[in-house]
Structures are given as C-alpha cells and as structure tokens.
Length: 178
Image (tube, rainbow, N blue to C red; front, side, top):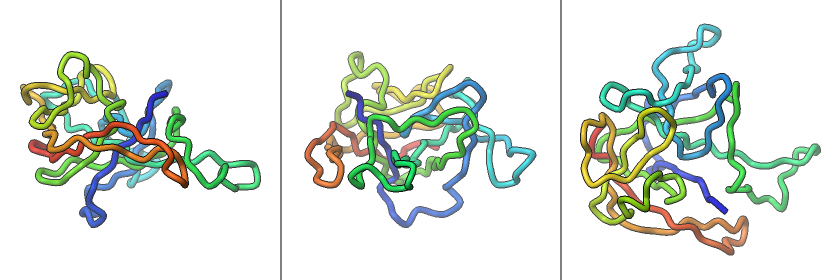
C-alpha cells in the first residue's frame, strides 16, 4: 500500500508560491508529484495548464500539495478520515501546487520517490525531478536539475486517519536550488 503525500512544512509560506494547476489531458497525478506550470489557461488567468517534466535543465516543477478526501453522496467524509492511498487527480481536475523556494522545508513520503533502491533516502541525499514524467528521484548529486531538495532528516507521516494508527516513512528536505 503506497502512501503518497507531500507538503511544505511552513504554514506561513508566501502566497505567491501557491498556484492552481489543471491536470493535463489523459494524465493522472498524485499528491507529491512534480508538475510543470508555465502556461496560463486561456479561460482563467489564475489557473495554469499543467504538464509533465520534459527537461530538468530548463523547467522548475512545482510539488502537488492538494489534499483530497473521499466523500459520500451526502457530502460527509468516511469516518472523517482521508484515504491517503487514493489521492489521485485526473484530467481536468484543478489542484493546488507549490513552487520551490530556496531554504524552505518540504516533506515527501518516501513512496513519492523513484529509484530509492538505487540511492537510498538518507541525510545529505538530494531529491530532483525526473525528466519525461511527474516523479521525483533520490540522487547523490544535484546534477543539472534546476530544482533540488536536500534531505535533512528521516521521519514518519501519520497515515491512520483520525487516530493516526499507522505511519509511513518520509523525508524532511530543504530546497537548495530553485
């Protein structure tokens, strides 16, 4: 069971870092994914058209931080708890994402990270976007990426709903390049 979540650890992050982004045609994203938001939707001057990361040397992807809750037809949430295993956003959904800011802290669930079997998440390891998709990956170096986060601590995220009955591995990072 993959737990996918990510967020900025600051509750007072600058408003200009928060963007609304429309999920591209034919694609599915999850909380914590990387998404490029450079072109405004012509129907709204406040919503960006999202796209996959195609070139890490020229694009600065945002991190999807939007939280989604499963609701009954009555509008009530199941036991008041989010289902962190089913946070998917589909074509046309408008979500919230945050731009990277140097020195700001972010938390990623380790399930959000690609290739963790190659470069194990550890203090001092970097997280960079992956070209040709919407993933982040662990890396021993920043390389040519325009955006990079450095792992400062290993942590856990409560995943058991209201009672926090379970936990998932996460990493606390600081944006070191944006």
